[in-house]
Length: 298
Image (tube, rainbow, N blue to C red):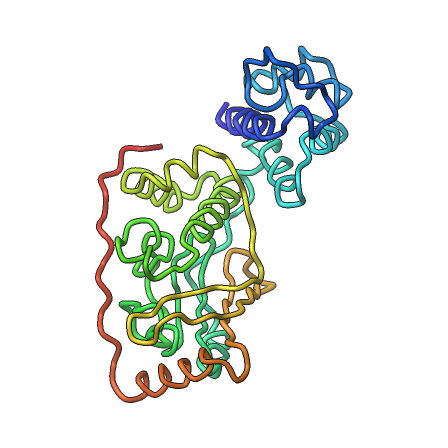
């Protein structure tokens, strides 16, 4: 039932964001719902209104691939959303039988590679636990971990820092975007690994402690970012801008090596060199720990 409920909620959230005009449907003046009506989605997808209504109420069986494709077209889903829709449509018994890859063990070769990188680099899992970071990344993010050492899960967690640390709004220049992307990626992970108790606990904690997270989670958006730009405001270096790349090891789809690269010849490149000098000169200062909220939100 939980699987059907999540699928129903996702369909409702996608329907609500499409305007009738963008779908080629006259809007009129007496509409009582945001976005499209159920009958309009059903008509666009070529399925019966009764069946679509049962899908949104969590009462229908597993939709066929053809129905999922039709719904994706009608709701104008992007590739990430299409994949998420297919994941939610899988029966829970099939997803729960799929063994969740270990997210804590980092291969020594990957750690050695990370420590050879001169720019900020770290290995995260899909819960945003920092499993290992090089010295420059520890300095940049003021992580309370030893550079180059694999740490226990949740010792440092970027999602927790983003939503529960009051200083994160100053640190992340594009805070609203970073928050939306992070919540969207956690939702994708939740759908893929619904029995991950550590993830469930993290989501409860973020929901208890952050109004921003609660609003984003309620919106139902999903996201995956493999590359892009990141603007950070370091207390000693000012604003620094990086291009980031995510590399997923072939033997563990739940981990990713994240490398932040400054533009050649930029002020950020000089800042990274300064961070490297600091990292080699003295140990990093412990970062303030984000407050833990009581767990009560599912």
